[in-house]
Length: 248
Ligand code: SF4
Ligand code: SF4
Image (cartoon, rainbow, N blue to C red; front, top):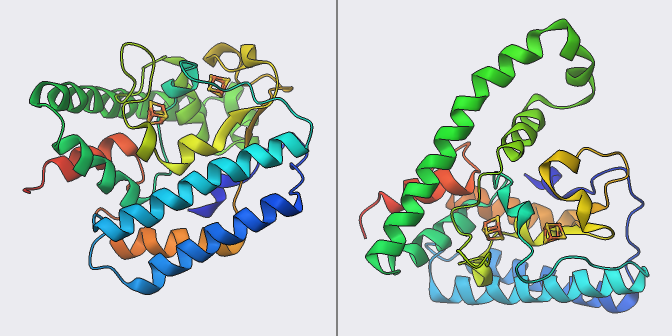
């Protein structure tokens, strides 16, 4: 799981100033607390409260690292085109907590989210054989040599500009407070005009993923596997659908 939070590769890593390092230490302490508590399930109030604190600290950590590096964060409320990515690499407990939240929404809102999640999963699955067939062609061999086939599939999905099921009509995230770390970590440190699907593969793209350190990632992975009920699935849409289909 943890490789998803690696830097996108083309940009130098952000420097981590001492103040940010301290915040990171606090995130690690909270994750250790969650791990060692051994909560029977991840929708437990204490689990959710602690994870929410860790995510609030991640926002501070990200902000301080960006500021200290002299970079400009282009992301802000209502900026939404990156939310057309297929949200992959979500931790099992994040999806389960989100599904719990959706179950408590008004019936109509829940139904719209479910329908939209189904549409997203269907679109990805439709795309899978098309991309797979294309990648067999000689002209695409050089691409597959350099890029993982799963990344090419996700990149192709992004070209569809399917809005995330959790994006409302005002282009705000309906689950902002509990959105997955993978959504939080993806930022733009430059010109937001590189964010749309048609520009995302530009070599000077300024999008960036700020990673946590190995120890934090290992604990997140450990929690993911501890609470995982749908092995191998790390997609926000399909996991939420599965958790929504459960009683309770
Ligand atoms: S990554 Fe790009 S589209 Fe997404 S919030 Fe940041 S600037 Fe906006
Ligand atoms: S969950 Fe929220 S932040 Fe993440 S892609 Fe969807 S709308 Fe965007």
